[in-house]
Length: 183
Image 1 (cartoon, rainbow, N blue to C red):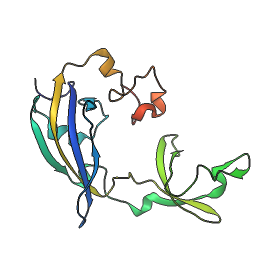
Image 2 (image 1 turned 60 degrees about the vertical axis):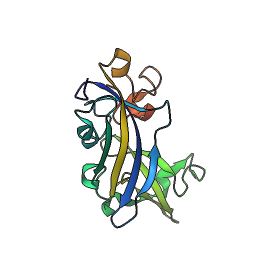
Image 3 (image 1 turned 45 degrees about the vertical axis):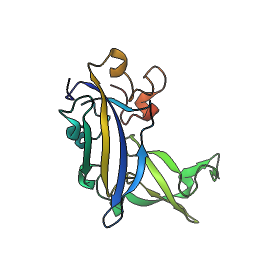
């Protein structure tokens, strides 16, 4: 059976990332017995990642790169903004335990969608937040092997990458690692 829309897929891989002119750095690797699992075409994976795997079968190895524009986009300076410090207050006091440089905080945009931002800097009057994806501006290089391809079970369809199910957590608010909830 080959990888195509609607199929359950499990892969092991190593991921290297590099910004323009930089040496690639390994940023992620699946562990033995803990492959990446997903149902192809459900929107939980990068479309370009899925397309690079399409047609492969169990045992096939892969080795491909995704340019930033085909992965998480280019780094956009406009996505770094300073927000008023008072929006980070709890009971009238600035939340200095959660709002620290480097922290990734869930925020809501004007449409009520949850987006993650990284605290870049805290000033006297505000908090500088970076709303670019942490991998924005990076070329991603994947090497790995297809471990499993099959028809999905009902549990596969209603799970978030195999790590939890919609019954386990509030997936609609982005729980269990889903971007946009369960399917």
